[in-house]
Length: 134
Image (cartoon, rainbow, N blue to C red; front, side, top):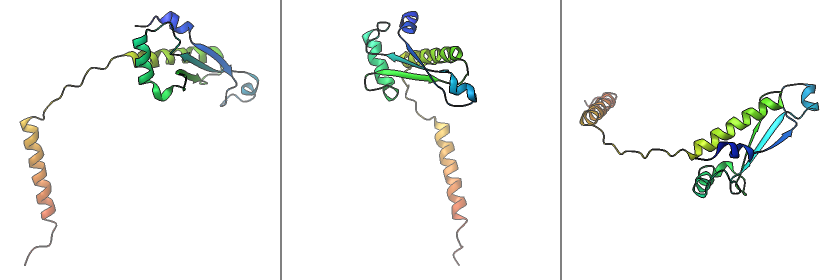
């Protein structure tokens, strides 16, 4: 499990001008927060966790292996920073969580019989739609 305090310290923040609601306030202040976390150069996580993160989050990473998240939900830069930190932790810890292996199961005898019964009923219903042979 990664050291969460070191992990938070390794996140780089950048404030940029936000689009969206706020009127003239948006044009004057940089309230949108962009957070980036460099996975390959992190000291908070070990090599095994790095490879796991790089594999699981491959669609969300840049070519250099940097995870970028942004938040512009609030007009406050501080609230946006808190939101983006929470989301970053959620994404990283979610990717590190190992999923349980799927157990193969077979359909029960009752479910097989039910399926065949319904299949027969459907077949009969369709047969009844045809014109009778005279």
